[in-house]
Length: 436
Ligand SMILES: Cc1cc2nc3c(=O)[nH]c(=O)nc-3n(C[C@H](O)[C@H](O)[C@H](O)COP(=O)(O)OP(=O)(O)OC[C@H]3O[C@@H](n4cnc5c(N)ncnc54)[C@H](O)[C@@H]3O)c2cc1C
Figure 1 (cartoon, rainbow, N blue to C red):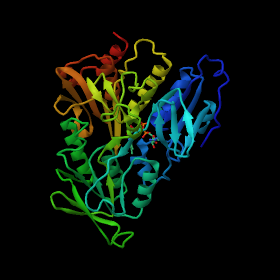
Figure 2 (cartoon, protein in one colour):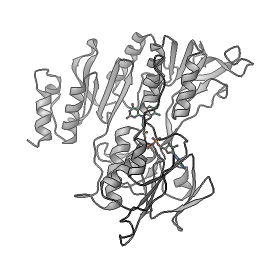
Figure 3 (cartoon, protein in one colour):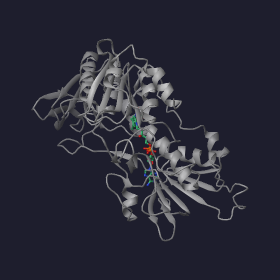
Figure 4 (spheres, rainbow, N blue to C red):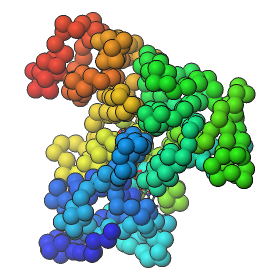
């Protein structure tokens, strides 16, 4: 979809008409368009996306999109009308291949070039690829794009046994969806608990048991060693038939889903000589070491107020809030200061379990339970150096919302208050939000 390039009527009236070029039309890129216009920016905006699809939401791809009883349909990030209403020059199916910083232009795969006054890299991340014997067999998929999801969905109708490599969020969401379809699902995870990078051990272990209860054959402490082929749907030995784990076990696999994490898309930034270290390095205004180039979302490594360290997050909240912040940084419309301090939060839906996380948990945080894990509705409060640092909730949206208010206001509560069901956590959080 390409809305005709246009010059908003008052752009010519501005003393220095700007041309903002955004590379990447995912969650961050499209929110940035929205926020720039809401902040009153009247210059031109060009958004370039290499995928041919109209901009869509990724989270459903590993969840509802995989259901057997529904026609798989992508959810758009914005209605088509948004792009014309906002005078956006949206280029689909075109890749930005290089940046000429001195000339302030980007080169495109269709051999055209576009000049910019401000360039924004919202290039996201790419799936980390497996490199074990047999990884190139047919029937082994990643899940990042709509094209990936369509291919996986089409395959699900024809298979019986599924092996998932990696018990991270996407792997487990997909495993739960595949179980709901009645398939035999094995998950191989090298670590000793699922989602180990992002969840407290107590919550990770609870989810391990929950997946076993769903009928997932979750194998912890077992990585993938190789795949063997032959004798399956596409036959001729070119199709995966089994996964062999690091313990030597063999698991039948009509298809395999690989969910072993992502790597940030930094290739353009690297080629342009921008600072890169686990993502494109930005300051708290989301600006790179070139003052006319910004980066945000999955591809950006930023100084995190809440993590008290540089970090790179992969979430809708992160992409969305950073886009709002970037728009203000570019237009210099921050009310006070420029530091990005939004509280990170995240969700994951695995079968009937809705996991929500506010803040950033560390594996060695002190943890306190609120509610009863046995009935599947509870929260884990994570304390670090005596202060509340994160709250993980399962099917407890009220706890999650209250935790967000408290953490955003940097209010503390004691582990005793957190565990006490008589303590009115919601009222406390509302008072915190109101500054009382
Ligand atoms: C299956 C799945 C499920 C998820 N579930 C959740 C969830 O439940 N909750 C949650 O918070 N988050 C979830 N996420 C993460 C969330 O979707 C991402 O964090 C978010 O999309 C990041 O936004 P972004 O704009 O930084 O990157 P993206 O949305 O990935 O967009 C980047 C875009 O840039 C394009 N691009 C890159 N380089 C170029 C180039 N050189 N030229 C042109 N285009 C380029 C890419 O093709 C891509 O379309 C999920 C992600 C996936 C894949």
